[in-house]
Length: 200
Image (cartoon, rainbow, N blue to C red):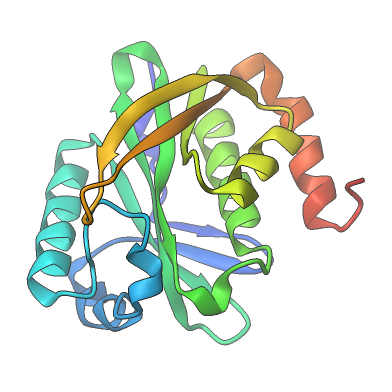
């Protein structure tokens, strides 16, 4: 079973520091969430205070039940909050979880933060928590994330059609990628190479 007693309070990489979400983060994270571009392809509009607060409260509650484990994400270079990510769909008895719930301020887009976040979360999942399977669900319209997951050697399992109802009424597909424990060393190498600028 997953060793959830080892869920980390802090995860540190070269570019990002992820800290387990707590009440002290609410006001600062709410300000980060005010950019409407973040929520363009999200099933909620976090620019609205009442929506953000409901999301924040639910995130804290889910963490107490260990069905998810949310983080706030800092840019190490200047200590600014830049977004959030989490472990979710935690199934202790089945040794599996998902990496998701990720959103970043546009100032952090396409700068390697998301890749390092994925690398760190996968690493914790497999090497600290003892996961046998880690899953990621990507919006079918997000070509950058789809390309990234494919380049790491993850397995593309299929598409959940019309899986999310978005704010504008559009039903979006989600593409499922997964990594098994025995596949992680190879995926880890490819992720590390990309982070070090050595990927093809």
